[in-house]
Image 1 (cartoon, rainbow, N blue to C red):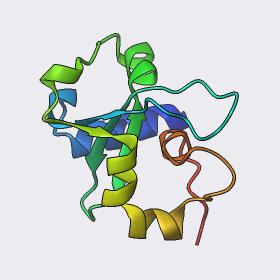
Image 2: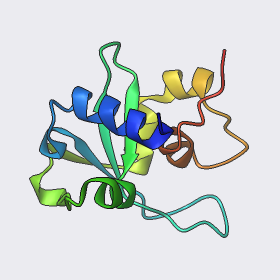
Image 3: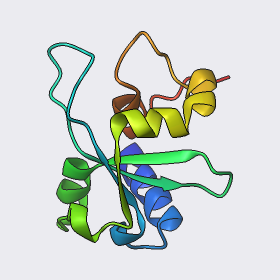
Image 4: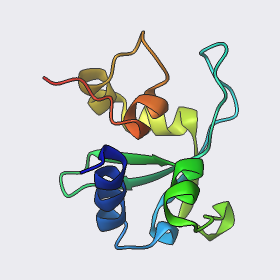
Length: 111
């Protein structure tokens, strides 16, 4: 099955089927040059691990348009990284690419 569909299913399961139960992550300043920042939706899986989905990708796959003000909360990218700093340290390649982008694309390295 398509990896994007599996990621969408996991995200919707974690957010109880509604993007309004997710946290909106604002990415206004990108540390990685030549990359266009996106906005993201965040939910946590049953173990508390972050499930991040690009708002644009969500629109493309579902036809639904999430609205920042209708989400349960809004976090900056920096606040997200502080909140999940320990988890990110062990699961994301800090030097390779944007952490949010890696999570949204399912590029978590195997441990």
